[in-house]
Image 1 (cartoon, rainbow, N blue to C red):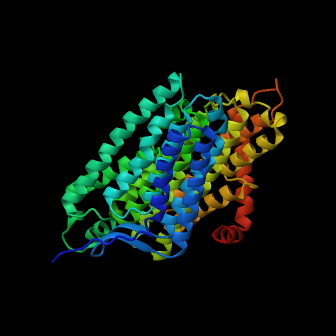
Image 2: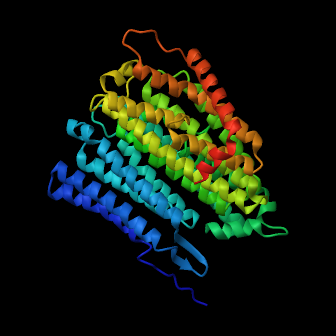
Amino acid sequence: MSLVQSVDNVALLPAYLAAGTAVLVLLVDLLAARAAATVAVAALGAAGTAVGAALVGVAGERRTFCVGADCSWLWTGRAALVAVVVALLTLGVLALSGPLLRAGSVPVGEYCFLLACAMTGGVVLGAAGDLITLVVALETLTLPLYVLVGLRRGSLAGAEAAVTFFVVSVVATTITLLGAALLYAVTGAVHLDRLGASFAAGGEGPLDLPLTTVAVALVVAGLAFKVAAVPFHAWAPATYDGAPLPVAAYLSTASKLGGVVALLAVVQRALPASVTGPVLALLAVLTMTVGNLVALRQRRTVRLLAWSSVAQAGYILAPLGALALAAGRTADARAGAYAAGVAYTVFFVLLELAAFAAVVALRPADGDGGTLADLRGAARRHPWVGGAFALALIGLAGLPPGLAGLFAKVTVVRALLAGHAGWLALVVALNAVLGLAYYLRLAATLYAAPGGVAVRPARVVVVALGIATALAVVLGFAPQLVLDVAAR
């Protein structure tokens, strides 16, 4: 019996738009040789990709590259959301890159082309239906970033950061591919849904083979690198600090979003929950704890944001661990864990981009993030930018009036409790208190008077504990109200 592969060009339209943007940027830079035209084409292409992805997503689920029931491309609501967010993040980073590009420290054509290529990988990633497409899309998102990190002319720190990122990423990709190959060896499948069906089948099957545990551990470990989860996090602070600020913003948002999407795809649809649940739960605890503890001692702005990004990855991984642990629970618990992971990731990347945008506005055009002392009193000199920075930090900390961050954390805790992972919810709550310390410290530094007393971490920890206690008392009297608002 011959099997014919189907091709649906409408489902592939967002990928066409993203890839076409990269090609068009290259041609405009070659033929017109005008920086403004190149940036304009890249921005219009990113906006067009976001609109196209949203329109195709509204039209309903579409599948292509199918042989029988197995499809390598599934354009669902989640795929549309991922593509729209990646395209908007690319557009935002292009806007942040204006001062850097005008300073002439990076070549405009190569910069915009590489960003468009990374956007293409992010658009494809959300629709990946098999391990091969997933890994290729993830690497298409990541490979241009190696060059972007070290693209700044005459920057030794950028070159070192690029080499560090490249070497560690290659090792992580190799581990992921080895795990995927072993999964194929034990199941004979690469499509995510078929892998999930193989592990869900009763009786003796792939789940009983020792090689399966090794394969799953390798895949999870390789993908954990992309979200900078402990112990695969060491590259993030050095790479973020050495990269141009807009590139660091893209690394901490779009790249992390890609890693979360890849992990969510394999955990939800392919890998056995009995193996991934404990692994992801352990990674979540280690990641949020290490990230918060090290962030407390940081003196450089971008390194503080990088370590806080590591901690935020732990909060994102927590509901994914609960999703796997809740495999035997109700469908509502699993759906709640999935929704919490997606919601938290979207809120985080938007707030993180806002924080980096403020740093870009407060620092020299082609400079790095500087130290916390360099930002002392910045909100007094630049009230609007400083206020926006403080609001982004408050949102990342999960405090009002940063309602997005607050509701995201409430959603995570609620999903963990629904998935009968109360101990993990307690760890998340304790780490959220630790996070308050350095976020409030940086916000206080922005409004500190020049020459005043330095803001001590210990003092901020005491203030954070007081605020956390007050919030706990308030939320204790009206928990259902907060949960109802967060669920809307």
